[in-house]
Image (cartoon, rainbow, N blue to C red; front, side):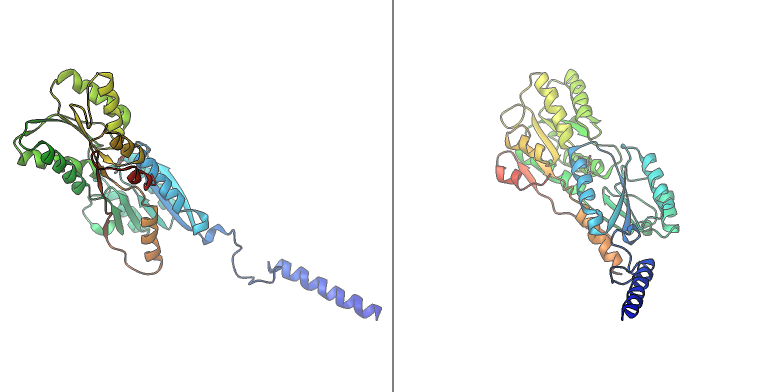
Length: 333
Ligand code: AHR
């Protein structure tokens, strides 16, 4: 009996050793990849514009929160520092790394044909997010999701028309990054209203590059040359913050109870706080929470479906006279 028991024990040990050698020691499917196998993840290369604004920071966070390993993704993130050439380099790196999807938040609309043709030739789907691109062949990208920037501009311009009626209005126009969809749409909205309403006049127009520092710098120089300013049309919240700093320093009154009315875009938490306090008169929403929207497109593609080629996000606008604390509290960015 003693000899038989030893033989059975020896057999059991050999079985355990051979199972372990096959990677099947837990008794599961030996062919299934281990839970931490990164090759099972969908690899997403994301070329982000930069970190120029609060909006952009919220947008980056939304993408980083969505494309996590726990959701089945590996995110390769690249900050282009507002330079298109950096975005082109990032896309080429993503192609070399054979990512599954390229997501591009383009700094400007034009100049993408060559590099996106390279992505297409490599068989990598490209999803455009936030701003749009202007390419000769629409098949160079799979889908786009973002804002209707022209509609945003129209809303802001309508506020000026409605609030000033027939009065003469001198407008300082601080634009975003020239050539970006956000600038093109918001500028077109204002310029169209100026063309249709002879009482509206743009007395200064310059880019503040969507940053607080540049917004302040532009406003400081405009204030040196212009006495009568009725409206400052800032193409995002950060420019508006810079403008407010410049107006304060110059001793000007502004906002709901002041002489100079301020228009802004984005409606970030900080922007709406300034709207509620009456510093900003009208703030048009631009929603940055695109992570889940891009993921929806990827899931459709993974499931063999065809996503909408273009999808616009619904957006609101907030007037200093009607905004409430609840509007701000409902905001995740
Ligand atoms: O493209 C969206 C715009 O880019 C936002 O309005 C601005 O804040 C950002 O930098």
